[in-house]
Image 1 (cartoon, one colour):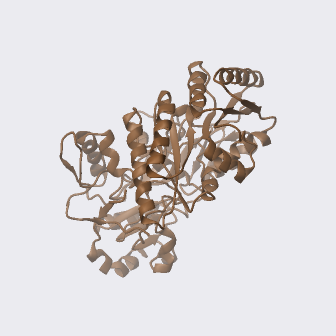
Image 2: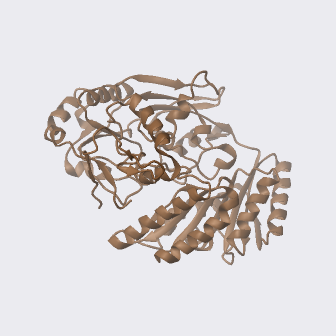
Image 3: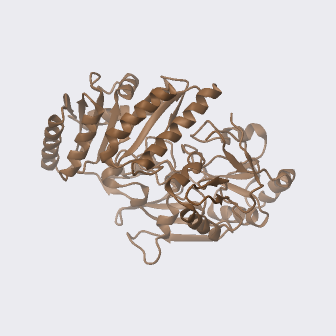
Length: 499
C-alpha cells in the first residue's frame, strides 16, 4: 500500500470549485454543501485511517431526486464523485479525491417501511445496521448480518461492501439478506432492482450491485429481509491448548453436519486483550478460544451443544462454558465485538487484515502468520469467522513511525498473498478499495480484470464514480505482462498523500 496512486488532480476543476458549489446549490440546499477546509476535515478519511485526503467539497443530498440531479451535473461536467456512507469501511473505498464531490448519504437515515407480512424492511442507505434490528425486535424479528461495527455502519455501506459478521456462517452475508435496491447511475438515471420478492427474473443485477464498492451506482434505498428470532439461542466458550486444536474442532463440527449460527476463534493475545477490555469471562489459561452459538428449538439446541462439546473434548478442549441466559450469551460475544477497541489499548495504532481461506488451511495459515509476525517484529492478534474461513489478523504498529507503517503494509500484503496461495480470496467482507487494489493480480489475470472494468465502463464510461478504487493502476499482471489502467489516460495518476 505504500506506493498508492490515485487519479491525478484536475486543476481546472479545482479552479472552478466555487462555480461548482453555486451550480450544485441549484439542486440541494446551500446548507447541504460543505466547501471550507474546517468543514471538510471530518471527511478526509474512512475506517482505514492511515490514508487521508481532503475532498474538494462534500454534498449531503436529502432525497433521490437531488442525488440524480447532482450526478447528472457531475457527469456532464466530468467531475469525479465519491459516494460515502458512515465512513466505517476498512479498505479505503470511501477515501476522497482532492478534486471530487464527496456525496455523503448521512441524511438518508429513515426506515421507510416495515412489512411483517413479507418479512422485509425498506430503509434509506444511511440507516445503521443495528437500527434495523431495533426497529423490529419488539415483534420478535431481527436482521441477521452483524458486522462488529453494526452500531455505526450504514446499511448502504453494507451493500456496497457485502458486509458480513459473526453470524454469516449460517445466515449469510449482505448478499444473502438483501431483496432490492433503488440506485442512481452516474448519468442521473434512477432505477430499481429487485423488490420484496425473493427472486427476480433476468440477470442477477442485485448480485452485481452488492459488493460493487460505489463504482457502479449510488444506492438510495435498500430492501432487506428480516428473520424471526429462534426459540432458543445458546453460546458455548471452549478453550484449547493450541489454535490448531481449535481449528480442527471447527472442521469436525461442520463435517458432522452441524451449522452453528456463529463460530469465532480468538488467539491468546486477543483473548487477553478483549477480556481485560470487556470482562467477558474468557478462559485466560487457553492458547485459543472458540465461541460457538447454536440456535433453534430448545431440544435441538441442547442436543447440538452436547455434540459440539463432545467433538471439542475429543480435540483436546480444556474448558467448556455454556451460556445460561441471553444476557450471559451477549457477554460472551461482547469481547469479540470489542476486538478493535481492545487492540487500541495495546498499541498506538492497529491494522485489521481481511482475507478468506479454506477451513482446512486454518492451522497452517496461522502458523505462517506467526512466522511473519516474527519476521516483521510486529505483534499480531488473530480473530476469525472460523466457520467460513474469514480471518482478521490485527497488526499492532505506530502510524507516526514511517518505518513501522511500511512494515505493517508489507506484513498485511504478505498475509493476503498467503490467503490466495492457499486457495482463498483477498476479502471476506471489507472489500478491496485502495487497500488491496494492487493485489488483484494475485487472484485475477488481465482478461478477468478487464471484463470487470468493462462492466464499470458500460455504466460509467468516463470513470467518474469512485475512480482509482478496486482495480490495479499501472500494475502488470505477471501472467501476461500487460498494464491495467483504471481510466483512459495513464499519465493522469499521482501519489496520494498520507497523514
